[in-house]
Amino acid sequence: MFLPISLSIVSDCIQLLEQLIATPSLSRQEDATADLIADFLRAQGLHVNRAGNNVWARHPHWQEGLPVVLLNSHHDTVKPAASWQRDPHQPTWEGDQLFGLGSNDAGGPLVSLIATFLSLKDRQDLPYNLLMAATAEEEISGAGGIASILPTLGPIACGIVGEPTMLDAATAERGLIVVDGEAQGVSGHAAREEGTNALYIALEDVDRLRSFQFPKQSDLLGPVKVSVTQIEAGTQHNVVPDRCRFVMDVRVNEQYSNKEVVDQLQAICQSELKPRSLRLQSSGLPQDHPLMKAVEACELNTYGSPTLSDQALMPFPTVKIGPGDSARSHTADEYIRRTEIEAGVATYIRVLENLYF
Image (tube, rainbow, N blue to C red):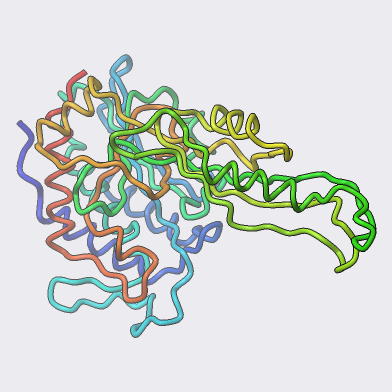
């Protein structure tokens, strides 16, 4: 059994969160918060690694040959909304609530994971190796974030991704594909009904996309969702357009790879479809995986997440869980509760306590 959580460690990590809130860290501009996290971990006696604005540390009692468990959350933020009633970079306590930009998404989960890691750093009998990573560019799914350091981290058995989930466990998460479609026609004079109207071709495809249903459903995530969100054609009123471009937002369940989805959509469309990227894959934790069994042993509520996180970039089993509420993310006057952080640390430790390979 793991020891009870150290309130002193949790308090130190909450002070780190206050410093993170006070330090602007927009995506691709997280160097100052990376410095804070690296210095904090070094002060705890850890050997710290850094690449760009990504910071990570291995458990001091690392044992070659054991499976590796990644604890990961991000320290970048979105821009503060214009409707903030407080200074977004002034950490402000009101009772149990800590207000500030990034407090909920994902500062609370991040410092809870760090506190968990520190609470276990002196253990020499863990049945796995722990790896703590505080990463950058999550809010933009940037190439300089977690994806950039995964090759350096080496093989990973599974991961816990810290995001505000009210301590429910997201065991599946939708992937995302943005697809550009282009219908090609033949230009002509509109009055003489010449040419082939690319706009009509595109509209036929849009109608097919509206009615098409992917056969594989998901109990957690539902069907693959396809939304046409932009369309553009024509240069002037009397010219039949020979090009029509449209954009699709596609949210993928864990039953398909992104390539499979694009291939099936192309099969029903006359227009040429080009995905901007296939890297943001859906994820699903297998029912028989040790991490799923640990979640079930803790009797956590499980669900499928409609929102994207760094889970999408991890090619190994993961669960997304953390203190805070996703509904507060990216909103004005964002906050996290001290009691939520304490409960987050306790929950992370319980999951790790029940994790056996």
